[in-house]
Amino acid sequence: MFMLANFLMALAKLADFVLTVYIWIVIARALISWVNPDPYNPIVRFLRQVTDPLLMKIRRFVPLMGGLDLSPMILILLIVFLQTFLVSTLQQFAVAIQ
Image 1 (cartoon, rainbow, N blue to C red):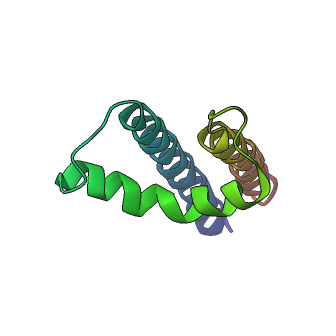
Image 2: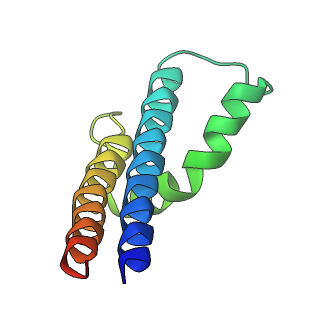
């Protein structure tokens, strides 16, 4: 049983790391949108390819408020919620089955 507990603990740490990295990618995407970036720049293309699918889904439900796009902030809040819920649940489950 300790192997499953260790696996779940490692999975929780990996999920925490991946979600944190994705938050920083969303922040970088939001910062780059404030300037007029070159759309053919590989970094800009990467940021758009990684974030646009989720941001477009959020933009369907949240209208622009005076030209202000709130979708990156909403996505970050959703990721933080998921990170808090998922990581802590996996860690508590791993501790419980030890």
